[in-house]
Structure formats: structure tokens, C-alpha cells
Image 1 (tube, one colour):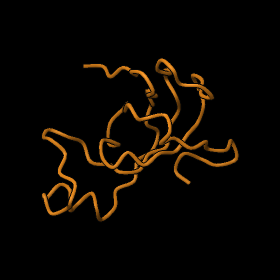
Image 2 (cartoon, rainbow, N blue to C red):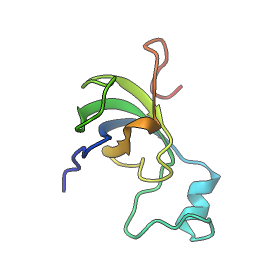
Image 3 (cartoon, one colour):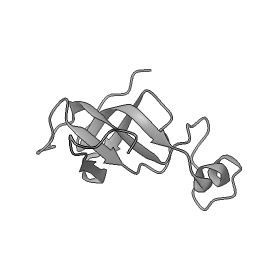
Image 4 (cartoon, rainbow, N blue to C red):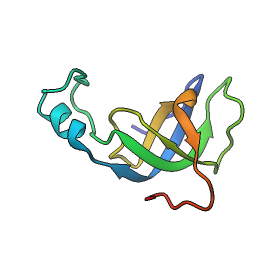
Amino acid sequence: PEPTAGPGQLLVRVRAAAIKYPDVLIIEDKYQMRPPRPFAPGGEIAGEVLSVGEGVTGWAEGDRLIAVPGFGGLAEQIVIPAPAAFRLPASRSFTD
């Protein structure tokens, strides 16, 4: 199903996702965090806001950001808590 931003959340179009050693450990259930299955790895993302949930201020559709959701970044879209997002300057690419 299509994700939607709930209160305090941002729906993000993922443009880049990092795969790091913790992702391997999470996949193998050897990390302290064990997300419920099925899940997508990808603990770091860069992307742009698709929609803003109720009560979120300072973000708008199209804003560029980076975030560390912990997992779920290897997806086309992800919902994250708004306080977990940081602005990505226009001078930086999504893969930087």
C-alpha cells in the first residue's frame, strides 16, 4: 500500500539510500534493533518531501532532506518523523 504521512510525519520520495554494515547485521538479526518482517534495509536516506503530516511546520512539498530512519530506506517512498529530517542544501546532490 501507498504510505501516507500521519501527524508529525513527512512522506519522502527516496532519491538515494546508504547501505552500511549495520544494515547487514539487521538483515541477519544480529543487531540490537530487529524490525518486524517484512522490512526494507537502508538506514540513511536523501530525498524530497512528497507530503507533510498534520502539525508539521517548516517543511513543504518539494523540500530536499536527509534522514537516518534506521531501516526502510531501500524503498521508493518512506514515512519519517519530521524531527528526524535535516535540510539538504541545493548545492549538494542526493548521493553526496
